[in-house]
Length: 443
Image 1 (tube, rainbow, N blue to C red):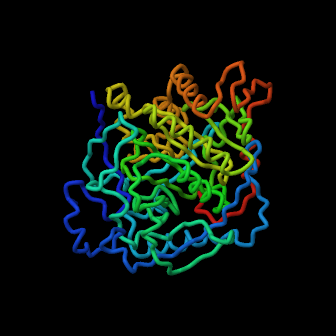
Image 2: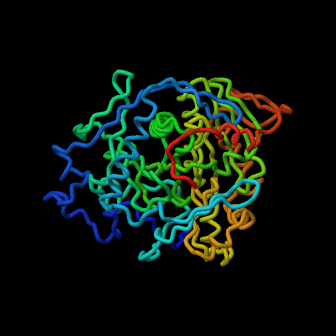
Image 3: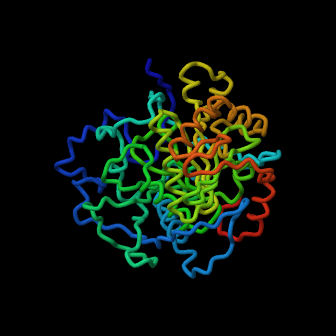
């Protein structure tokens, strides 16, 4: 039986239309909207940010390193802010996200509630299949090559000489399929953007090693712990089957960053530490450390690939400037399709994707915003989580895929940690974040 749910799709581009509205017939003759397909790309230029490929990881309990001797510390942030605000002045966003009410919910974790009534207005519900994580790319459906170039902020590529460069007008190299950073016209927060790896390759929404490493590079290059990247798989509230990550700035700790964790394994090769998330409504894993950034990226991306191949929907949060990655297998959409979610929760119209799971609750009704509490947030997110038994099964699949197992017996390239080390607490993260000075929109 095919499982589907109905939900209002998030409009991420002003050129996003219902599938039946765009059959590609205009492709050969030019579409007239300066898109990213063969009709418009020849001769087109976009800003290019060439990043330095650093390969070191600084890790530690709740670590957010404030040391940075790089004089270019503000280049990426300044570029993103400047271009994003320029698109705001041009009126490209569907609403002013800075006018949305936001508050920190009283409680131990400090869940963040935002009233964002503009995200779902004037759109009819659409059916989405939620029982298949891997689905082929469909050119006839909306994808990011159909957006206008005015929604693209810049190209994001590795520097050829290991130095940071910015080129205000760089040709689009169609032969090498550029990585693009574009606005999300339905933003959740200030600076909300989409990172679309190798856009012209028409990659479906599935993580691979190369693309995940690119997302980590962006987190590192931002040099700002309040800039996080997120990923939603199909079946875990991604609605566009074209590979993309999301990112935005929020000047507050996410509740998930404050959750304690307990180390369960360390990779012998690469040194990546893997921990269970404790005392949080959504069960999952934390990956951190590693001898190089690529070590961390490979372990996380291999875990994601394992979930994809085993048809397990999941969400990913990249935090702490690329030093920590949270992985959440989830089942909310499946429960919703099977009629196992209460009408009370469904009526909120909250789609628990990566941002909600991380503790930033985007609410669409004023009633829910006014009544927001840690108890209500916890109750919703608890429905997202796999059971202890199912999570154990999923962890065994993951650890087998990355060449180790959570057992008393040490297997292959990982060691199992059963030490008495005190679980990392949210006080460590709060202390690390406290005092950092960044140009953020305050909560």
